[in-house]
Image (cartoon, rainbow, N blue to C red; front, side, top):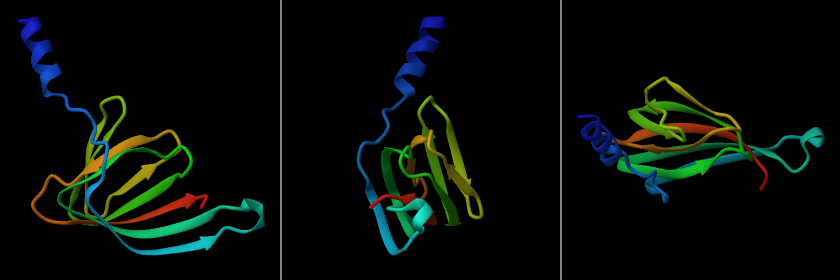
Amino acid sequence: MAVAFWLGTALGQQSPPADNKGLNVGQTLVNDLGPQFAGYQLRLRKLTFEPGGVAGIHSHKERPAFAYILQGTLTEGREGGYVKEYKEGDVIVESRDVTHWAENKTGKPVVLVGVDVVKP
């Protein structure tokens, strides 16, 4: 019985997606952060995940971020097996130790506003 449980668990796990699909980046605004953060910008973007859309696995080691869900439900997976659904009004905190991916598993678009610090 333990072998059957282990086998079912192993087969049920999927590899994180490697590439983006059905993810549209809309309006993007950037602003230099100033002399104390020379070379870095604050970036604000509107992102839309179409039904079935995916953001492939990526790290935030060099670009911490926040994402505010405007519409829909987005499923996020993180290294280590953490999975969470975010709904309208929720905020995803993407600190420097986060490596994750996201997926729209619903039949409706997911729209979010992402704000991050980037070095162009």
